Length: 193
Image 1 (cartoon, rainbow, N blue to C red):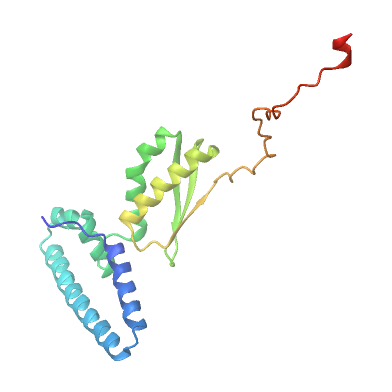
Image 2: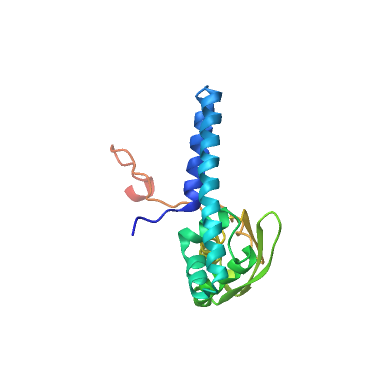
């Protein structure tokens, strides 16, 4: 099997290359490259759409499930707006996969919704939201799971996060006492009497 592709990273790379072509100054060439790219992506999208129609028409539920759960194929289905599951359904599935990990941090997560702009709203449950290090770890795990399942999500907003504690007073750093320069040691008068 060929190497796996990250659909989002590949899309970002294509966008960067198109922008770079635009900056090179030859607008006509950049426009032709963009048109060529649209044509190729459109062709592959139409082919993928036909594959999904055939799988659906033949009631091949297991094949459809496997296609939709394959990371690369799933990303392409999302790209062409062909995924059989909604973004919210895929986010729910991603949260179900990460919930056992959240349990290790004495917490959970509730999906509040996914809006039209692709913003996922969540609420942390349990005690994991009280510890800043747990909060960061849990939030990163959730965001990775969601990005893998629903790459079209633009942002994840988490309610119930305890803000980072404000830095307290600066601690006084105590170090070794500075050494006195070499030389005659003054002796107090009381010691001489």
